[in-house]
Image (cartoon, rainbow, N blue to C red; front, top):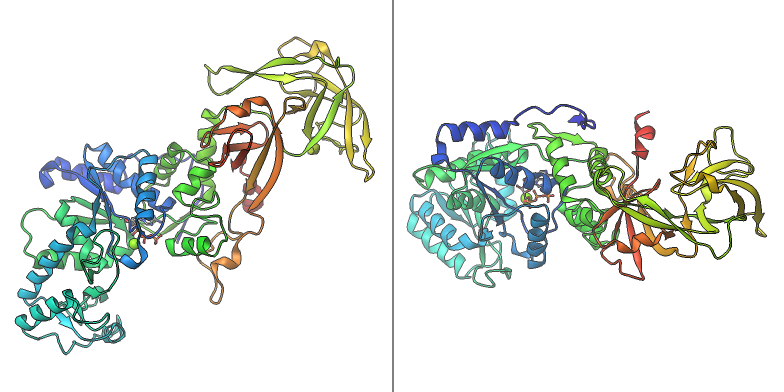
Length: 565
Ligand code: ATP
Ligand code: MG
């Protein structure tokens, strides 16, 4: 597997291979100059960042070349699917900033048509009803090295097969008693061509067709035909479908499709370090309560990333930087973090918050006095407005910013040392008071009025601290997230081990904090920077009087040093 390191500084090639194909097709008038892609999720879970990659690719191609994209739910497996998932998927696609061609489509829209097409193949003697069990079919398929065994029902008459298929449809057989199989080639070197199953019996309620059907098309049968029915021109999927392509082509060929057919192109799925990406595994994390639902901010789901404070723009940029590869690869999750950091650095307002407070008293600052000091909301934005930060005699600073007995290069606060309070004054530490346990409970300082921020002063200091005025402090709850897994490839573990053995026990830390009044203006989903601490976003459950913030990402890549030396 290729390892792709953080590629953020690399120059991008001008066109990826899919763009080249589309450009060529459009230039040569293939499909009458039409471009129609699709995104075909199965509604059996929430979308993850891998799906987001596929969404950006399919919708992005159509956007770039004036085409359209269908959203089609591949709802052929009723026992695992639900409208909850359908709705969540639509919300996520919209949130990413894409609009599908109306209406929303479902493979189940084509159940009648697919049935008709199956009958057509039976009539051509290209499909037959088989009585073998799933297990017998599986062993009968042989191995890639040895040919499979032909089913005893392979050469039954068309009339008998039509009758049998009808009986399957009206519920005369139990689950597993019959299947419809394509009649292709039991000796094909491609296992997918060895008389694959097209329909199976399932007495299951379907979220859209209710109990109308008790036979359901297999994905491989439904998928290619759905593309064809919709007139998809470029059917883009991930590499594991390469061997299926021959089967899809066989179906279209034997259905005597006239005119242009959808063409399938494959690209490498997105894999991310420190992340599991399969919906089955994500569902386990949810059901076994390792996380707090599909939108837990530690989940790689689109809804989790949204709740964590990721922006649609950052995810689209990420998808773009990842590029479109033809070989399996592993992307460093720090590239994703880089993209959100870059976005928030440019766009997020700043605020001061203290997460591990210690009280600091400025002894020479008049009691009962308060000033409001101007602070720029976003230094990266030339037109940024200012916010007013209250300042008075008693403030909080971070406990880590004070050391009683500091090492040599400690430029923060220590007895006798001077530092600047951001947007305010230079102060000097004169003394400390300790509690019974010996912890610092108060730091006493002197401030220098002529060092007010923006004024000329000869006093120079090396350190600048953030702080929060105690009187006006807003109490908040902060959730500090770390990676959910402690190993780079949790999906690639040794025999006998499970991805859940590698869950990071410290992936969530909750702390109380204090913020300047400005943070009251933040609403769920809005990201910003707590100065010197990182990027944070108000949680969906945050409300006035009960402010909850999620750490979206740290200010710097704190893992870079540890992991890459
Ligand atoms: P999973 O394996 O996570 O369960 P899936 O492939 O079964 O995913 P689908 O709902 O069938 O999920 O996927 C919808 C579309 O998203 C498909 O076209 C699939 O190729 C694409 N897709 C899924 N996972 C990834 C990924 N990691 N990277 C890129 N595209 C993906
Ligand atoms: Mg799938």
